[in-house]
Image 1: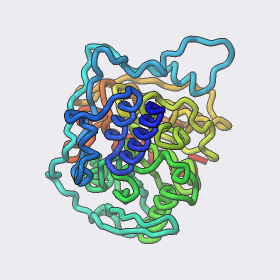
Image 2: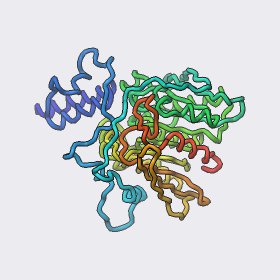
Image 3: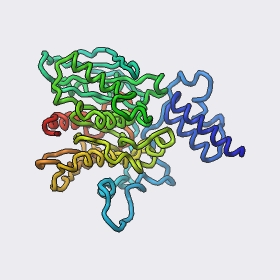
Image 4: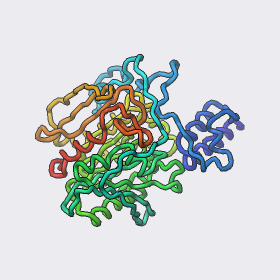
Length: 409
C-alpha cells in the first residue's frame, strides 16, 4: 500500500507542478513516480518545490539531443503493414518519415531572448478583453501602411514560458505584417491560469466553443475586428507548441471566424483531456485524437521539427489529418505534391501540399529535418527559435493570404 500511496502522492505533485512551474518540472515528477525514485539535491525537479522557486524561471533544453540509448521519435510512424484499409491518419504517418540520418545533429538554440535590434515603424499597442471566462491582455501590431481599409488579421498564440513581446520578436511576424499591411494580435496567457504561461489545451473546458480560453481568444479577435477595419474573410490564427495546440482548437471551434490555421510544433484537437494524457500525447504522439474536430473545412499549414523531443512530431501528422478529414467531402483525387529543399542557412525540409476541391491547395505539411522544438526560421531576439530553418512566419502568411474564406468554403 505504501508504494501506491507514494505513487498517488507524486502524481498529485506533478499536477500541481504543471500549474505552478510548468511541464518540465511536472514531467520529472511523473518520471520519479514511475521509477519509484526520490528527490535528491542534484535533481532539477527539486528546484520547483523549494520555497520561492516559483518566482524563478525554469530553463529547459528545448533542443536536447537524445542519448544514444534513447530511440529517436520514430516508433509511432514506423508501423508494420496490416490487413484491410488504413485510416487517413495511418496513411499520413506511413508517408512521413522522421529521424533522418544519425549523422545529423540538432542545433543548440538560445532560450533566453536578446533585445530586438530593429524596431518596426508601425504601432505596437496594449489592450485587454473581459468576458464570462475571464480577462486576458493582448498586444496589437498596427502596420504603418494601415489607413482604415479592410486588412487581414493574424492571431498569434505564444508557447509556454513566452509572452507576446517575446513571441513577436522571435517570429518576426510584425516585420512581415508591416510588409504585407496586416494587423497582428498577440493574446497573453496569465501565470494565474498556468504557472508556465501555457495555454491549457489539455483541459476539457478549454477545448470547447464559447467556453474557457477558446472563448477569450475568439472574443479578443472580435474586439479587434470592432476596433479596426478587418476583412472578415481574411482572419487567421497560428501558434507554437501549447499555442499551436490551442490554435488548432480555436480554428476547429470557430470555423466561422478563422479562415485558416497555422500549427507549429503543436498537437491535434482532442489529443488530451487531463495532465497525464497531455504528457502521453506530447512524448509519444496522439493515439486517438478527436477524429473529426472540424465541422467545416479549415485549411491548415503545419510545421514540425523531426527531432522535436518535447512534442512528438507525430502530433503534426495528426493535426494535418484532422484538417484533411474536415475537407474530405470536397477532397481532390489529385495526389499530394512533395518537394524537398534546403533553407538559405542549411536546414533541410520536406514540404507536402495536399489538394482540396477544384484542385486547389488545401493544406501544407512542413517537416524540418534536424530541428527541435522551436519556431522555424525565427530570430534570436526571441526564445524557442531555430534561425537556420525555413521561414515559418513568411510561409504561414503566404498560405493564409492565399486562403480567404471564399476559397475555404
